[in-house]
Image 1 (cartoon, rainbow, N blue to C red):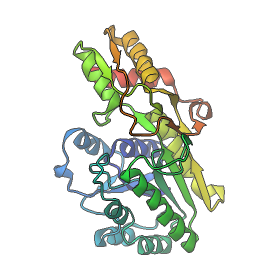
Image 2: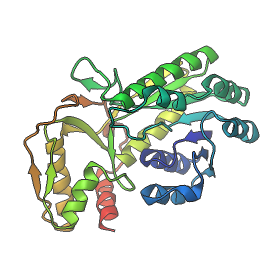
Image 3: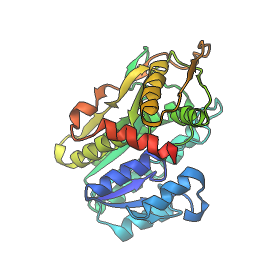
Length: 309
C-alpha cells in the first residue's frame, strides 16, 4: 500500500511507521515543523524515520501544503491520521475546540482530494481516555479536555468518511511503553532505578492497560492493512496489554528489569490520594494471543537495553 501517515514523530507514530515499512508498505509522512526544529527524543525518532519513509516537513494536516502533497504524490491507498493536538493535554485549560479544528482542518476537502487520488480507506487513532471507549467505571466519560477532543474528532471523521463512502477504522490506544518514549511513567521508574534510587508510585490504585509499544505497532499495522480488504464501512480495534493496577504493573516492571540488570529496582507504593481520573479504564481485546509471532521476552529485553544505554 501507499500510505499517507500523519503524526510520525510521536512515540507511537514512530513505531507504527516502522512496523508498516517493515511490512513492505510505502509511507509518506508530513511533519508539522522543519526537520531541524525537533529536539530531544522526538529528534531521535525523526532521524530514525528518514530510512523508513519519506518525510515532508512543514506540511500541516488540512493546510495548503497538505493538499499539494495529496495531488503531487498520489495515488494513495490509505490515510493514517495519527497526528493530534496534544500540547498541555493534562491541563484544565486545554482548548478542546482549537484541538478539534487542528485535528480536522478542512477535513471534507482533504477526503475529497484523497478519494479523487485513489484513496481506499482511513485509519484514525483513538484513545482509551476519550469518552465511550474501553471498559471501566461508568459512565465512560472523557478523562480530560484532550480526551474530549479525541472523541469529537472521531465523530467528525465518522460523519465525513460516511458521507464520502470511504471505509473508516478506529484504532484505540491504551498506555504504550517502550524504547523512544517520552519521559513518563516507565521512564520515571527506570531513571530512578538506574541511579540506585527508590521509585515512588503516587497512583498505585488506578487500574490501567499498559502495552509494549512494539506489540501495539504489530496490531496497528495488521489492522491498517485489513481496512481495505475487510469490506466494512466502519471497524474498530481496542488492543489490550497488561490489565492491572499501576502498583501491580510497577512490580511487574521491577521483576523484569531486576532479572536483566541486577539493579535493586526498589519501589514505594504511596497511599493514593489523587482520584481525579476514573479508577478503572482499560481496552478490550488482549493483543498478545492474536500475534503469536510477537516475543514478550524480546520486548522486555529491548526495553531494558534502551534504558541501559
